[in-house]
Length: 552
Picture 1 (cartoon, rainbow, N blue to C red):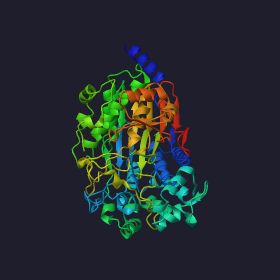
Picture 2 (tube, rainbow, N blue to C red):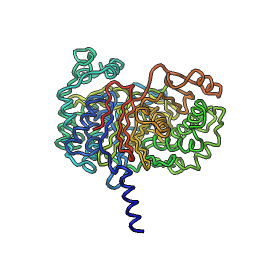
Picture 3 (spheres, rainbow, N blue to C red):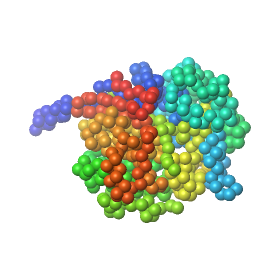
Picture 4 (cartoon, helix red, strand yellow):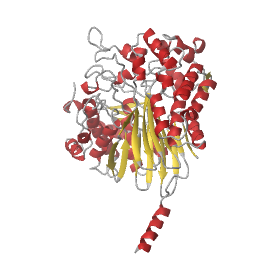
């Protein structure tokens, strides 16, 4: 009997690859992907590589992320199977208050909420990078930051998406000399492939490399950040910076079709929403229904999850979130019972609170190393080029994450998302996010994925997960035409390639208001490991122009 058991164990060990034979990184910029692989080659693990990728993106893709912003890093540690989310989300300054963006008429002042230092929460990315290095990496933080320092000192080539964002925010950039110096050299838009050099940012990164997070949150850099903020009407203080704390969160874990999904927990709304949607959909075999009916069922599940997002979700350190209820299959049973397979339910018939969502901003990368460690990370400064405010002498672009709070119940933010009191502004509170870094683990295969995209992040990740369960590989997940519903406004948005004319006609007949866009959205990056075959794959979204997915 012991001999038979030994034979079975040997057969099992040869049938599945115990560790990936190669490492895979997919990110939105080739310099960041190369930085990650460089750190792996120098003896680092996936967590060290995540520091290199994050910090390099902070230099070369500032329309999407930066050290003046925040991030969620979802980690899987192979040696003990630990799953954890590192919460480097920004926090409201100590002087923030519920009505800080309301004018004398009680209306939201969008300029104040979106532009300049008044829009900025206290950044969390640097604290998160130090936490990764201290608790999960094996290399010094200074070594993992070196590729980013090099990119800032030596420059990188301007590319179409960055130039477009600079053009879109030129009037705001013109308000701030330090922003003009970087984004509008000689008062003009940078030309394609023109080098963008950031000496001040390199100095700030060197201070972090030397002193850790204290090089950013204390000392000379902190003083410059606060001085610049106050000069232009901001409310940051030295104590706000010094007291910022990164958090470790237990991820949302759910199951679908025999796989375990590990995804973002609050203050992200993504994991709970994805769990809710998949629980609703678990009663149907989506492969067996026709294309229009499948879209209808998925849309109705999206509608209900986003409705719950608007009511229940916020910073878990400030509000009690009914996570167990929202992610329980029985709760999904109740939501599903109200879905008519033939007819859309108008959002205003769902009990809830009182135009178009945007977003190719924020950024994402996915990593798996040869030990089986995994990182799914989504980083952000909020909208494209964020507040457009760079603090003098630091190179740090301030985020505009305060707009992710609910400035007024029922008032949509820049992404059209509705919020209630659970996400109202309060000192030191983290704003609700849609970022949804996700890891899908089956007995024989693993997927690591995520995307930027504002309010659409959750639905893009969802569609990629469903594509994975359809048996497709990373190239398909990241290329898949996308559609989206977020409860309010009550519209079904779609990329032009998502629906045929016949499907649009069928969906309208079911009661959906369908709005098809000529442009695309998102910039997804995913990696994949097939334990049985040993195959490792990586893919970057073809919608991006600078992304790179590499296995080596």
